[in-house]
Length: 439
Image 1 (cartoon, rainbow, N blue to C red):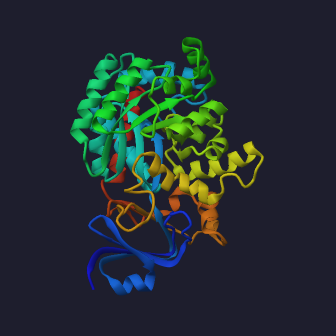
Image 2 (image 1 turned 90 degrees about the vertical axis):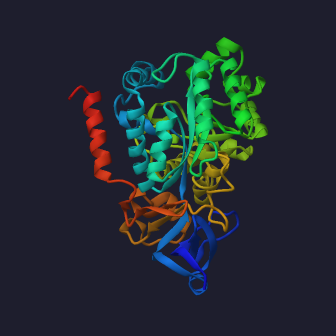
Image 3 (image 1 turned 135 degrees about the vertical axis):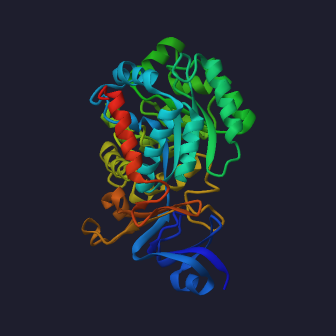
């Protein structure tokens, strides 16, 4: 029998491939970072000689989750300015804190904490928008995590750059530094229509097109934004970005809370992926995105946590649960966003939206081994009748037992492997004391 690195077994194996039912008593064979076989546990055991066997009959095996929109390094601002509307929260608290504290050191340390939190919660891939991208990339690599890292672009100065041209020049250098990396995908992230002019958006677009990298932006997050853009340009944000030629399938648009029927049609026609961040939108009272209408119109909708400063966690299990429940109520339809659909938004659709559907998001032969194992032997998971319903409506992130990214175990039996977890948290407390003026 040929050797392989791992055989991962489970009472349930969920490939998340459409129309493929859960595999009972199945197994996944992994070698050199790739999935090389999937099938019945006894069949796989008879085909390979694994170096390591993990999982078990009371486990479920599924693709790693995808966080389609976050600001990872903002974990160090978790709870710094809660219970405020977005405009006040951003302009009077977050931007001043960023001007004072952002640096390569801050972003690198904070990203380590964010990666630790996400990996232990089953997230193997995240789509980020922030500054000091090299520090984020190095930290994500150290943690063994897959990431699409958007170099933030604005029309005004921050700790990262002075003007749009400088942001874009730095983004281009970041792309050159990381293009082709196995785990890190560089991208460009013009912040939002109220912080970037149409000219800045198109400069970012041309740069992204030159290198074949994704684009990432906030879009139509609040009524204030929509009103401001209409007043300034005579049309709402989605129409504006479509008119200038920015929107296409390489764009990930976060939020899209205040979009009308015409704009939903534009998003569908252009193939724009939407990152739905329901918990952050609820907490900031920004509103609730018309996700059911988007899905019915053919828009690809994934799930994001947003940053921990506005959520206040990076937990995609809870985003699934909230999204599935809230949109049933909002639409008046208890069949809206069923459990399989919600889990797809967090796995296969998330990967597709990020342009990584050929690499991750499902368990298929030839794809990267981005796999999580969840423990079903818990009181709150007993008994159950449908594995998808169990995961979406009952499961919690601490039920994640083991996590593999690119064939490497990064969480093994609940233990975080890449770095001492307490050391990461101690560094976070040290930064918090500095920020709060306690040291």
